[in-house]
Image 1 (tube, rainbow, N blue to C red):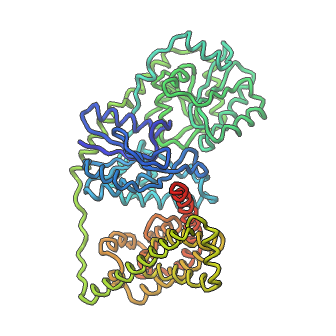
Image 2 (cartoon, one colour):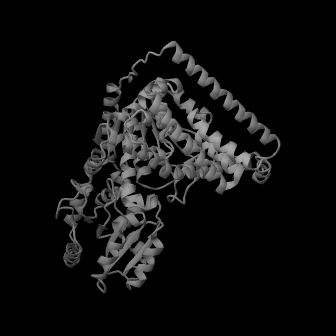
Image 3 (cartoon, helix red, strand yellow):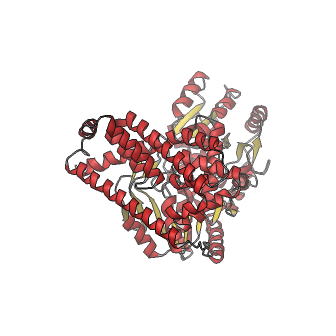
Length: 590
């Protein structure tokens, strides 16, 4: 079987997603399958290296640490993957590489399996000022992903329940990520552990509570520091292994609590050395509730370290009370469990039972179960049917006329772009803005009118129009003119569809597009939510959806509110992203 795995994250990045992908790839290859990976390059350059295809990207570290955004289409590389003709596509991320994953699966009519790795509800503080709005966006976004996947894999029952609560349509199967148990179960000499303890300045007689995680706010490491205050002065050390954006705050709070002598920050550790840090610990501790599965829990058990973690659905079937660890729900229960453990004598049988309990999560079992799901999806895959729509000769003629006008408008835009390029105005935004300014208010009026018309009669992708506005008028006026023109055009498209009805759609758009998004109109409330999300985030054909909304019972007031409130963010995002890409492109050419 040929398997294409797509992911925004890949080695040398170290996180749970990458660990899962590397494990799956290696084990599938052991079982005789061919596996290729499509991921993001660490630079703007796209290339292929061995079995891995890298798409050019730029850093968006400001949005999320280490995150990258695809900038290159890399059509040739994608075509090469299509020519390789995989039997199935397994997507591991919902963003940059998800779109080519969908394209390849659709082109070849093969299943698209998607693993839902992240509980985004716990990360809304990175992108939304409102927790409620953030959760609504996550719910709608998850449904959008589910509509494009043939099957979604959830690492735990917790994630499956969450997706079903979102009303995701795709079937959801639970597939726990496996790990290479031997990496953590291999013994480490007492001399090496003693040397590591000395490097970390941990007193020889201290018991060690170890936590391995990314130091981010959602990991709730603050609660571990709270626990240490109840153990202040006792022969115990909290060892925090990992790094992240929240580390400075944690170090500051450690000092405020006077815990400098009992807390150690080990920082980022090389993957081949992390097992030593696990084995240095007497007890693995965690207060996080943001885990989809918690690979570090399994790694700790494989290393023979019992667990003491905040109760979470992802731990069901992992922690057996008193056999390989404990779970707590309240600070009082947490402190009592820690006190009891530290007062008891070290128990080798507890370590042995912890190690044995990790065996069901082996890499081999992980790959075997994934293979079974792949074959099920391939067997169940049927080519989706698109109901034929009979169009009258008059409608077909109008459709051709509108298409011709759109093409003519596009050619006019291309000609204008070539003129600006040859005159050097694209290399100098100031020169372009000075030239446009000579037209006075007429230039602004014409541009606003163009933006309105191109929503009603699509000429350019909306993002390119936004880029043009910023280049010609600057970021402030460009945003204002884009906003006024696009909102006016959106309202006009809604009005036209409201008057002329559904047949109007077939004069402007393909039947396949209409049937694809018509599923959204099955329930009015659901359509309103999906429509608002599509307008807020540029992930769907906004122009078409404005027409489609006009054929539904959606009130004018609701449509207007969605457009006026949702468009600013989408326009700003389009303008910012494309301006960044444009600056990089012109810099490269220059």
